[in-house]
Image: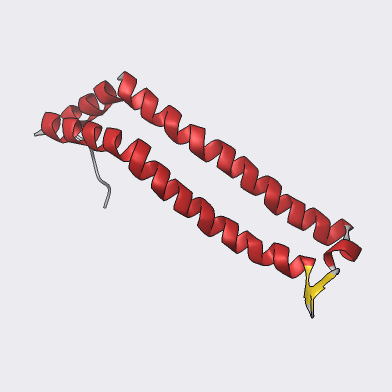
Length: 111
């Protein structure tokens, strides 16, 4: 089933998309997401590069059988959850109020 929008829905969206609030919302979103994505990709690629081209370093024993590679691998999961947590807090504080306001305007306009 394909959802079709009505002309009034299209017009309401276009009007809201043209507002400064929408542009600000998009800028704030990208201001968080782009740097975090770049930082995570650099961190992940460091892990991959070290695993392929620095095996001696990655095999360095830290405690017992725990080596640098295992720590890096586990930190990938920690980083993923940390970014999700930070995004949730950022979104709640900085994006949701504006998005809720714009959604309410849209809902009011199409009814």
